[in-house]
Amino acid sequence: MKFSKIIFIALIALPICSFAQKNKKTDDEGISEKELKAEAYFVEGMKYYIAETFDKAIPLFKKAAEENPTSSGVNFMLAKSFLATNDLANASIYSEKALKIDDDNKFYRKFLGEIYTKQKRYKEATTMYEKLADKFPNDVDNYLDLSNVYILQEKFSDAVEIYNKIERTIGVSEEITRQKQLIYLKQNKLEKAIEEGDKLIASEPTEPEYVVQQAQILISNERYAQAIKMLQNAVKKNPDFAEGHVLLAEIYRKQNELEKCNEELQVAFANKNLPVEIKFKILGSYMLMMKEDNSNKTLENLLNLTQELVKQSPKEAKGYVVLGDLLMKKGEMAIARDSYVKSTLYDKSVFEVWLAIVELDSKLNHIDSLAKHSEEAIEYFPNQSFFWYHNGFANFAKKNYEKAISSLEEARNLAVDNPELGKHVNALLGDTYNELKQYAKSDDAYEAVLKTDPDYEHVLNNYSYYLSLRKDKLSRAVQLSSRLAEKFSENATYLDTHAWVLYTMKEYQKSREFLEKAIKQNSGVSGTIIEHYGDVLFQLGEKDKALEQWKKARQMGENSKSIDKKIQSGQLIE
Image 1: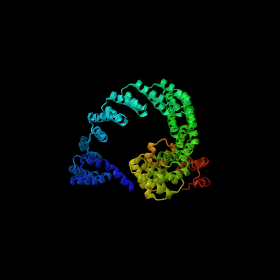
Image 2: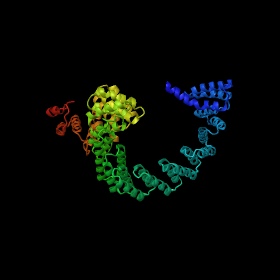
Image 3: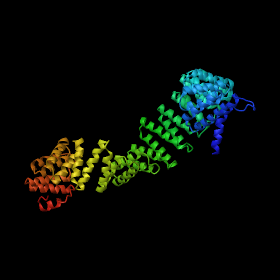
Image 4: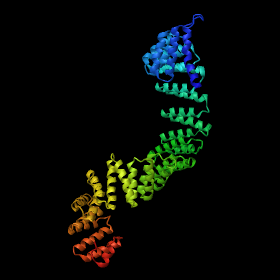
């Protein structure tokens, strides 16, 4: 509470002083009633101003000004209040009044200069700052304000002249040098910009940041030879100047001298004092190199650097992610997946990392890992249908059908805006509900897929086959399997599906034709297809040939429930 009072007193001190200056009276005369009223309004207005309730402060300040129109302080606070409400027009009016009353007040003049600048009244602003600079030649801020107004008017030479004045007062300054360089570069005066950088380096030869900034200017203007010479000299004087090696590597990369680039990066990376953030930038440079030089050697070099980074910063998630990316380029999917998983120990918030983990589990057919990792991903990204789908897939593969249904239904709800994923979700829901013998839900899920994609082969195959096994909706089954056989006429499995639907409908001769076509295919001919062929032959009265096919199916590894009984009895067992 005491602190607030001190602030309040400090803020009102200047304006109250102005009351006294313009309204001097003898001790006998005392303070007039108007002055007392003005001061009361002013103090009340200050309370609202401090609370940033400017709309309430302004009317009170106006009343104070009416009672005491010669108070510069009241007019100044009105100007500040209007500026706070972004009313530049009124802010300038009252600021001008304050300065007119107290022309020697540098704060009023500076404030008015700021308002003029905001109003883009640059000539008036220039006048304000020029007077300030003349009157207070040792106040560098006035010169800086003046130079900024010159720049806004594109009077670059005038701005440079002001900067030179400042340098004569305070010596070489990084801020001033940077401003002069920007002006020279804008004017396409590259040599002068470089001269300024050289002056800054000469003023503090041990400051590596100045070398870095100068090198960046040289590199961006393709002055590579000059940059290389300067950087080589800098790293010779300061062996720990790792950024110098990074910049040298950048130049060599631009010049396609990849061996030299690699050498410089290796030196920089070995520096343990180099912050980890910069080392990741080095990796980024190497990634750029890989686009130009996709050789195994470059990949191995990058892998070595990344593994070194992981050793130096074992709790930095980004290192494991980069390592995973590189291992993927090398084709080592399982190790890449493990590296991504390791990164989640230190940062679980990166969606793309979980995406990569789940996709790799799926590609590698690591079902237990897929179930575990998709469940973990759901914890952090519960609104992502992709993770729910893969969790459903994993549980389906593990025959945890109830759990699979729960995840897949959630995936379907979330995939409303992703029809492509929605198809896969419904297809798997159809399979899962079929396993649970919830056939109506299974059929609905399959039909939902076919409504958007009539040629979805997985559904055409499974749906028609399951209907044939149930001997249900056989006309629909043959419609689907016919489409499947027509669209994929060289797929042995799909030809077998159509043949089996026909078999179920007792169209044995047609079934035989499709099975014989399936058997002639170069790939995909399974023991199941051969067994089905034997069944059809038996139904057509060719029992010896049927037995021969059953035996062949057994040799191919077919282990259906009835295959052995068929062989032993020589009879068809449905």
